[in-house]
Structure formats: C-alpha cells, structure tokens
Length: 310
Ligand SMILES: NC(=O)CC[C@H](N)C(=O)O
Image (tube, rainbow, N blue to C red; front, side, top):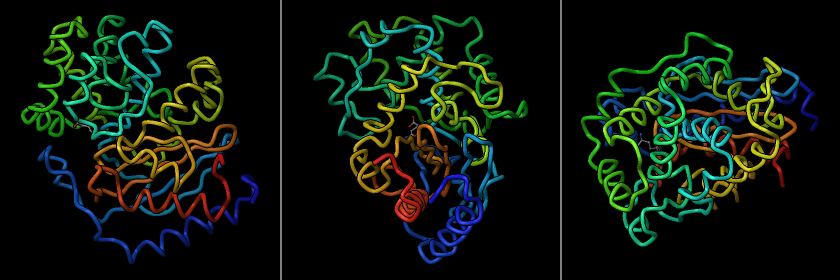
C-alpha cells in the first residue's frame, strides 16, 4: 500500500479502531503516580502524519494526555545536538533488558545508565540540559511547541506535583548516580526538570507531528529547520528501536517493526524514516508499563499496511 493512498490508510485506521473496541478493559492505568490514575482508562486514539503533511486519524486523537517517558526522546535530541559525542561518556546506547526504574543494573555498571530512555539515563540527560541552558524548562517547552506547531502546549501541574510527591525511586536512582560522580548539578534541580518534562501534555496529533523530524532526516517538516543532523536522527531512531520499550523492546520490535517510544501515560510514538510518524494512546498498561491497546493498534497497522521498516 502506498503511503499517499489516502482512502485505504484512513480505512485501515477505522477498521483497527473498531476491532480494538472489543479489547478495551485489558491492562491497568499507572497509579504509582496517583494523578495519572485520574483518567478515563478506555480512551483510545491513533494519528498518522506523512512527510507530505497528510493526516489520518481515528478516535480520541485531539485529547491531551501525559506524555511521560515519550518526552525522553525530545530531551535526548536537544542535548545530543548540543553535547555531541561526549554525551556517550555518561550514558550508554545498549538495551537494558530491565524495567525503566531498575536500580540493580545501575549499581553493577558504576552509575552509568544503559541508555537515555530508562529513568536513570533521562536524569543524566536532564543534568546536561541544566548545564547547557539558562532556562531549561522554557527551552524544552519551546522545543515541543515548535516541533508540534502549537504554541499552546503546556504541562499538567497536578501530574507534576503528584510525581514529585511520590518520587522515591527516581530519588534513589539519582542519589546512586551522584555517589558515582555521574550527576553534576543540584539533585533537586535535576529531578524538578525531569518531573516537569514528564508532565507535558500533548495530543496524538501533536505527538505524531512533533516526531516527524525523526522521519525526515532531522528536519522539521513544518519549519524546514534542521533540528538535529541526519546522522543524529539515525542514531536517535536506533536507540528508540533498541531501548524505547525497556524490557519489552524486543517484543515491540518483533510485533510492530518501527523505532518507537512509550510512556506510562499510555502513549506510544513511532516513526518510519522517510515516510511517516504515528502516535497512539490508550491509558491501560501491561505489566511492563506499555499501553496494551496502543501497542496492538500499531501491530495491526504495520501488519496490514506492510509499512514497517522490515
Ligand atoms: N515509563 C515512564 O513513562 C516513566 C516516567 C515516569 N515519569 C517515571 O519517572 O517513573
């Protein structure tokens, strides 16, 4: 199926959306951040945008949700562009095979996180952001707004405060890294920035749009601006392919065949370099912290359209 063949793509999304109605109810909403539990668990949306700016959608695609760990792709892009290859001295590029908030591996590996998408790695990225930017929150927010083409994107104060008040595990991770000398700025500042970025809210449409520079050799298709070099876009996509779903990265690759990133708000964003970007959202998660329905939707989509990278 050709990516420009509009009717079939819209029809496929509709078919998938209807089919998944019967799977609603599987999995549980994340509640270790209590505020994330205050969402209708049976929401579902999927939105695809092609590099030719065509849009195809089904379901709740204009509703905002907490992007959580999907944000880690964008903070990595900003920091990688500024820091360059030195970045890899403090964070690795290997799949962790462990949950996103695991402590044990971090101790075995002397405070160097396996990759930038587990929580420890994202905290190192936030530490870099603080070192590079005088107003990191504003810089990150501006980055999301430009990429998504919406100056009104914001964050959810209640989710931000809720995570901050229940941040025992992330505090343990950052303290462990500090003890190995792998955090340079004030721990509270780094955690605060991390919670802020995780609490940003976007719709499926906005996320699909924001991801499109990664499908477009690093160029924002809306502004034609080079966001990251094409070589860096290739590498970010590679890390998404290998590490975007923590200890379920193999499963996502196996079923969907696209570089992607999930978040505990129930969102998944994925890209097909040279063709399209796509975002799906449904709050109920499986045991690995990834959205049951969003993952299923993407599996059905790439299987039926044959539009995976493999
Ligand atoms: N996988 C996720 O989305 C986790 C992000 C969440 N803010 C946390 O730190 O636990």
